[in-house]
Amino acid sequence: MITPLTSRIVLTYGSFDLFHQGHARLLQRLSMMGTELIVGCSTDAYNEKMGVPAVTSYAQRRLMLESCRFVSRVIAEQDWDQKYTDIINYNVSVFAMGEDWTGQFDQFEDITQVVYVPRAEIIGTRKPFHAVQHNQMRAVAAG
Ligand code: C2G
Image (cartoon, rainbow, N blue to C red; front, top):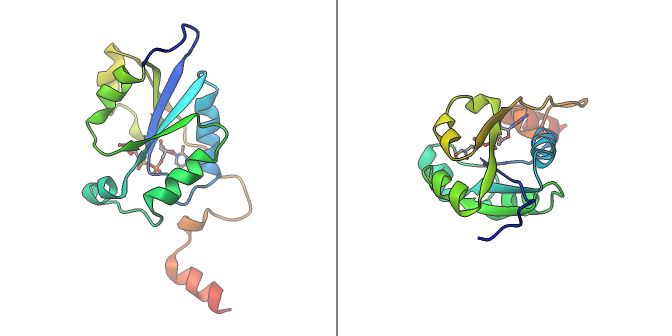
C-alpha cells in the first residue's frame, strides 16, 4: 500500500463486543495519535478459538466500528500472528493497545512505535450493559 508522506497510521485490535463509551473514548484517543486509525476486529471464529466468544456477531461488531467517526478503516482479525504483517502492509506508525496488554507486543518496537493506552474510565450513571450480571438483567426485565 502506498501512503502519503504525511500520513501516520495507527493500528489497534479488539473484539469491541457490546460497543460502549470506554471503547469510543479509547478509539478517540487513538485517532488523535495519527491521521488514520485502522481497527482489527476479531472474527467470531477467532474469538471461539481464543476461548472468549462475543455476545454480538462479527458483522454487528464491525458495523459499530464502521459507524464510529474515529475509525478510518476496519479489517478482520483472524489470527494472533497477523499483527506483524499488518504493521508492514499498512505502513503502521503506531501500534496501540489498552494497558491491559502492557508488554505483550514489545517485540514490534523494531518495526513501529508501540503504545499502551490507559483504560478509559467509564463515566456515567450506569455500568456498561455487559458488566451487569445476566440474572440481574432478567430480574430487571421481569419488573
Ligand atoms: N478498552 C478500554 N477501556 C475499556 C474497555 C476496553 O480502553 N473500558 C480497550 C482494551 O484495552 C482493548 C480494546 O478496548 O485495547 C478492545 O477491548 P476488547 O474488546 O476487550 O478486546 P480484547 O480482548 O482486548 O482484544 O489479539 C488482540 C485482541 O483482539 C484484543
